[in-house]
Image (cartoon, rainbow over all chains, first blue to last red; front, side):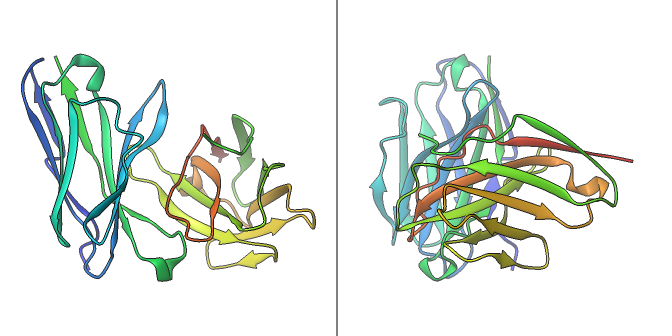
Length: 114
Length: 110
């Protein structure tokens, strides 16, 4: 298995632009998580899905952030418009109930907003 | 919010056991203790988890006190590749909503 796949690995964009981060979870996993990591705030859970349905989005910082999971093999995290304070590493992780909390993380997308 | 307290940093000599403590005094009866680590520039990696009993796998051992208010992750023979930030997390049995906190930065010294 290729593991959790994220794209792009690096993204540099200008303030005000739309940014879309992509994630492909491990096949058969029915939970998908989006995290953000910064030096100041550490690793934060933004949102998670179960069977493609958003369960808890209380960690999404503001309305500029949105996440979708149109099918079991694909999810997006969109920021529109982007701001310099959104610069961070964004991780996607997947899991299934049988794993009892073992989440598999992708390599992350390093986002820089100038 | 993170419900655990860990030391900010620790050092360990290569080849020796690394013992990483974690306090979780407000842990609930249905919450597991999970340990993850994050090697620089990589995504976090699952290590081990437990509820009440001590657990061991190929990576580490987890010792949970009888009152479940604290635990210790043991890396039996630390190597340079074990240098990482180690996170102790408590979460309900479904284990799906993790709050990572700041973790312990472990440096293994040659």
